[in-house]
Length: 350
Image (cartoon, rainbow, N blue to C red; front, side, top):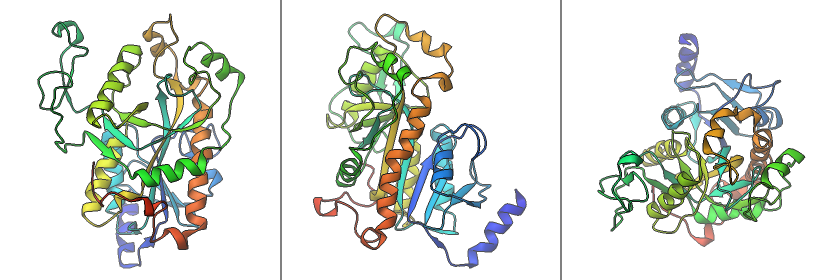
């Protein structure tokens, strides 16, 4: 690792490598190639990310192809994601000022909104960890939850305040809609096992074959499950977005990633407007009706019917966006897709 760090330092006198797209994944299950994939492997193999760039100051080595696509694995959880993205953003080997960032990983999904194997583009990313908490067995009568917003004294206390502690991040609506429109007809993998699982749910969206949609994501480092916590997630996202967001997927790392990108934008290292978050559904966030939530703790994630299809879907959908950006770089280098529809200010976290 010392040698790798010395090599990175030696490269600081060279011209920084211009990056067109950064693909952000969160975990890999084994090697980067040649075995059963995690979130990174399909990108490595199918996008030919064959140049390995050591980064000992972060969780995992980087990989890059000759077209300007850079791939990374942050490690699981908000802390690793924030640290790894900050490490990349401050690395003098790379020029990231024009880069687009695509977070592409798996998630749980609300059966009211989608089915396993589906892919959701988020406009809002909301933090599920920044809160006060009272055990549900001790909450006052009439409270819906023991989770209380930061610096409030009751659930969903009004008026809602924009405290800017990282409770929520608003992505460029025009860029998100552009990505959705570009990919809404992408064919996603399905299977008999997935069909059998989704038919246990009553929601029409849960019973649909996998599809691409727009829907917001909740990031929390605690893996949660069950219909009661799903209700909390929906309420929490509505509260922290001023009723503008709709909770669809639950993940872990994205607020950590967005926090680092927000700081890096203020330092002029990245453009925070050029960020997309794509989450694909490996599982439902609650059991089928009549089943206890604890069953989710008794099944390994790799055994979920939607696990490998969701990993594949993340590449299938994300690849369309990456190909469009890279293939038409002369158009998108200086002007964002959908820019005529308006954009939020660089570095904004809301």
